[in-house]
Amino acid sequence: MSDKFIYLDNAATTKTSPEVFEAMKPYFSELYGNPSSIYAFGGKAKAVVEEAREIIADSIGAKTNEIYFTGGGSESDNWAIIGAAEAYKSKGRHIITSKIEHHGVLHTCKYLEKNGYEVTYLNVDEKGFVDIEELKRAIRPETILITIMYANNEIGTIEPVAEIGRIAKEHGILFHTDAVQAYGHIPINVDNENIDMLSASAHKLNGPKGIGFLYIRKGVKIGSYIHGGGQERSRRAGTHNVPGIVGFGKAAELALSNMEDRIKKQTELRDYFIKRVTEEIKYVRINGDLTKRLPNNINVCFRFIEGESMLILLDMNGICASSGSACTSGSLDPSHVLLALGLPHEIAHGSLRITLSQETVKEDLDYVVDKLKEIVDRLRSMSPLYEDFVQKEER
Ligand SMILES: *Cc1c(COP(=O)(O)O)cnc(C)c1O
Image (tube, rainbow, N blue to C red; front, side):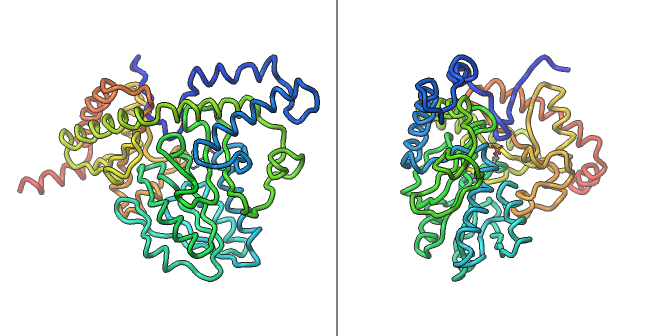
C-alpha cells in the first residue's frame, strides 16, 4: 500500500472545506434552536437560514422566495419531475429528457412511466450533446416538462442549456435542469437561460452532504413534496437542517468568490492531464467535448483494459478515481452515458473518470499519469486481446 493519498473523485463528493465546517459548528451545539420557533433563540437560526437563502438566490440570479432547501440533489430532481407531472397532468402526460441524465432523473422518469406518463429519452452525439433538432421534433401538445442536465457528471459535457430554455419557453413548456455538477463550478443565471426549476447539492461544491436546493421560478405551480409543517412556504415540510443550510450558504459564497480563478486553474490542469495521457499512452479516447466541458472533469477510455482493475491498482497507489458515476460502480454494466455516446461495450468498460478539486496540483496529476502508464502497460501485457491486436498491427 502507498502512503500517498490523492483524491480525484470530486464529482462523487468533495471535502467539506474547513471554513464551511467552522460556520456550521455552532448550529449543532450552542445555537441549536428551531428556526420555526417564536422566541428569539429560534430567531437566530431563522436569520442564518435566510442569509444562506439570499446568498444562494443571488448566485443564480433568483429571488429568495424561489429557493427551497431539500435533502440533496436526488430529492430536488424527484420533486421537480414528479411535482411537475402531478401539477400539469391535465395539460398532458409527456416528458422529455436525455439518455445521459443522472439516475436521480432517469429513475424518476421510469417511475412515472409506470404511472401513466410517457417519456422521450433524447439521444446525444458522440461528445454528449443533446440534439436540438431532435428536441424540437419531440415536443408535442401534451408535453409538460423538459428536463435536461446542465453538465454531465461522467463526461463533463456542458449542455446548450440557454437554447433548450428558449425552446421550452417558446412552447410554454416547463424546463428543469439538474445542475448538481455545474452549480458552484461554472456561472449560471436562471433568467438568461430560461430555467424554470434547477437542482443543486452542497456536497458537490465543498459543502456538507444531505443538503440541496430546488429553485422553483415564481408562477410554477408544482405542489408540495414533503407534507407536514409550514417550512419552505409549506412546499417542503420538516424542521430545517440548520447546520446544513448554513454550510451550503458558506460553500456557495466561497465557490462564487473564487470561481473565475478556479475555472482558469482547473482548466489548465485538466488540459495538461489530457495532453499527457493522449501523448504518452497509446489507444486512448477522451470522452466528452474538449472545451464545452466542466473545468474539473477528465474522462478517458483505455482500450483493452478493464476499468475496475485499473481502479483497484490506482487505489493501491493511493489514488481515488472512478470509472463513471459512484452510483453505478459495483455493477458490471458499462456506464449508460458512455453507451449513449455510441461507444462499444468493450471500450466503455475501460473508462476512467478523474475529477479535480481546488486543491489539486500539477504534481498530483504527474504522479497519476506516471502510475497510469505502469498500470496500463501491466494490464495490457496480461490481455490476450491486446496481444492479438498488437500482432495484427505489426503485420
Ligand atoms: C451527485 C449528483 C446528483 C445527486 O445528488 P445527491 O445530493 O447526492 O442526492 C444528482 N445529479 C447529478 C448530476 C449529480 O452529480
